Image 1 (spheres, rainbow, N blue to C red):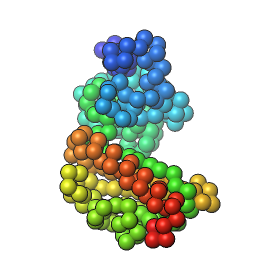
Image 2: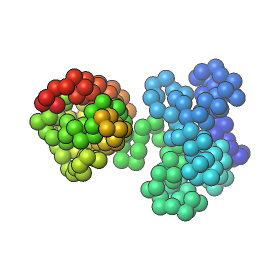
Image 3: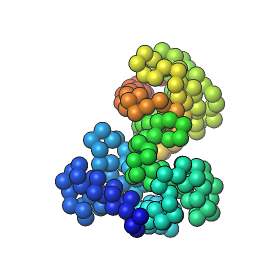
Amino acid sequence: MTRQSSFKHLVRTRMAKTGESYTAARATLLAGRLAPTRDAEEPVLTAPDAIIRERTGRGWEEWFDLLDDWGAAGRPHREIARHVAELLDVVPLAWPAQAVTVSYERARGGRAVGQHPNGFAVTASRTVDVDVERLFDACADEPRRAGWLPGRVLRERTATRPRSARFDWIGVDGLAPGQGRVAVTFVPKGEAKALVAIEHSRLPDREAAALLKAWWRERLGALKARLEDGNPDA
């Protein structure tokens, strides 16, 4: 296998989809923009080249070169992650090791965008003009949550006020009922502004992931509107 062939293949795949020149397609991918597939909503590469270089000491082309030369093509996820982790002197589950491994697998077609070892995952987030305590209560308190989530779609597993909460997904008709876990993170952005970020994982397929990504975006929009309208029950 020639050096950097996996990365070159990724660039050429984008060229075929978009009509861009090699230079333009390469720059777009390294900047962390959208994947070269019409239905993808996330980048193939898990971070811009500048970020992965800052966190690991190597850029994407260098990582793909190293993994190609090592023979990563066709190896299982855990084996690749362990190898990358050894090179970085981190544990295999650390973000840098997983980011490199998942990006390489996506580029080679061994992993779809949004796919993880235990299924597909989607994310959604909103910044809301309320303090983080109120935002946390609107999500973690079941009566308040009912105001913007239809029915009992979540069952709480753990919660750490006002930073995070984790739930089992019970689900609604047509939206992967009974499949998945939901992790919610809260980040203060000032005295009266906070971010809520949701990750819904362990989904069975890309179709369920696409439906739930759109659904969570819409629901977080409803949450934002409810809180910012000053609803006393929110």
